[in-house]
Length: 320
Picture 1 (cartoon, rainbow, N blue to C red):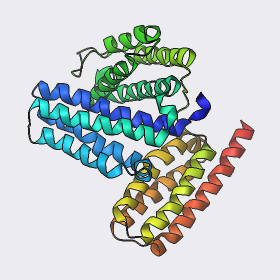
Picture 2: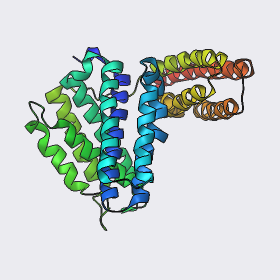
Picture 3: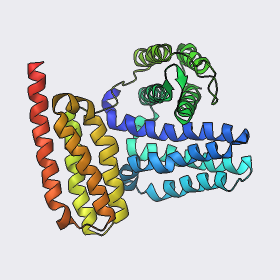
Picture 4: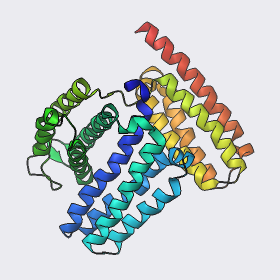
């Protein structure tokens, strides 16, 4: 059933799952009386995840509700409310996330291939966080380590109740043992061990549940999406929706450019760097009140860079 969804749908599901992963670790830290760390993780969905999924949510009328619920969840910890109140706030976000999946992804969201694809993507994200956390065999960035822990815990929760869950249980249980809690041990598990187990778990999801392991679009697909969003940006600015425009540019930078970053940096590093600088500058300009007409020359330059980038990518692939 993979043909019913693609990498974008998986990325959206992963983002929704990351919200729950952040909340899992936030609640544990809150119950352990570490309110500052709990607040950090309770705030990440609002500050980091929402901008990435905002446009998809907006198209289906659920952006405002989810943004409000995310704010309530962070406030519950900021104001040191009861654990029950905090948990209820987190559960409210979870329910809205499930509804958003049904709206954005459609019927495929209820299938095992899609669910397993999201779990595979979440575990890959956990591995990336774990890599960022380590430096010289020690944890140097504890929030990243906590993210990895929360994402693995959420992945384990998501496979519960699957008809063939036993086939994956050993893999996820081993990951839970390798990242055993939000507080890093003095000697954390070596990165290569975590990555090996995570890769094996993801491959088992592909074999037995039909998981789609490609989470990013091709460079051509990423460029198409960027160009679509540039056109959408012009319409948004015409309507004076500065906040929405800022979120859209954030998504171009955090999602579309990230999808292009690795192949484009290899084939055309100058273009990759220029695109990053221009998109970052565009966000600043919008914040300062730039209009569609003000940004039109910059949009044309970005479109030209994208066209040249695709040519350089094609040439690089042919030479390779």
